[in-house]
Amino acid sequence: MPERTAEPFAADRAAQRPAGAGPCPTPQQLRAMFGHNLRQMVAREPTVADLCRRLGSNRSQFNCHLQGEAFPRPDILHRICAHFGVDARILLEPLATQRPAPAPRRR
Image (cartoon, rainbow, N blue to C red; front, side, top):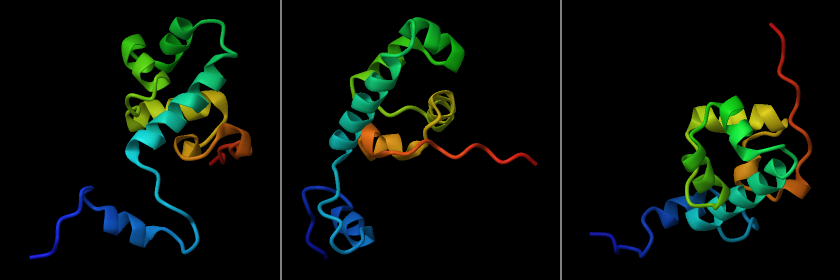
């Protein structure tokens, strides 16, 4: 039987990262990055409550996102990204390192 690691699937995650990419961030680090990025973007909004209404998001759950306690559901993440003109890299990278998301293609 293979030896168990402290973190499930840690070996799988490490194998998926490109060589030289550094250590894989933990879920806690990713949530903290997302919360930090989201707070920066929300600071430009008139009120968080109004933003939540426009996004169709529950205010108390949105607070969890702002504090880095939870990730949004995929549909809410999509609305957040569309509203702020960013892509899902806001989960992984500092906001300052990102370029604006490309405009959606028209069909």
